[in-house]
Length: 207
Image (cartoon, rainbow, N blue to C red; front, side, top):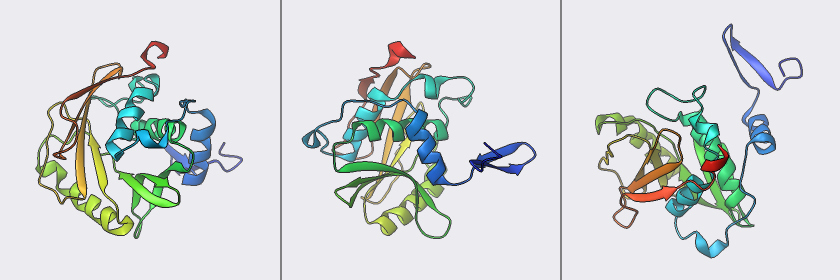
């Protein structure tokens, strides 16, 4: 992969994909994804998409000890798993983009497009255990919300939900999961969002 330009060395111990485009192509080619798309009327809100995505992520891609952090799933693994699940689920006319360019060097984790219009943005920020931990992510999310002119959702996996004061266009979504990532509980800072809602992964038997 290094010889053909798919990967490039960062230093003696680290390599990376040459570009996000190549990374997306690799994810689309090899990452497990759902085969049955949702109907457009099912997705009322961006949080609905998170719920369906959690049902259809392949647990082994985020629960394997080789990719997990000490306290749970790693952001990068979860981002890739949601990206694959979203693109397998989204109705015709919608798609999920990966590492989307904003201002300067900033890149939004996931951006969902609906009929060429920006529909939802997601920036994963895991293991934020205090309000102070959210200061940087909330500020960054505000920049994304202004740049893309959409609401930005901040999924977090802390065992105890923390919901800092945010602008209306910044929504914190707490996603707790069990050890093997087969069950989730989702909570939201949005007053109209889910409150401690249980979600069972539909692919847990295939992990």
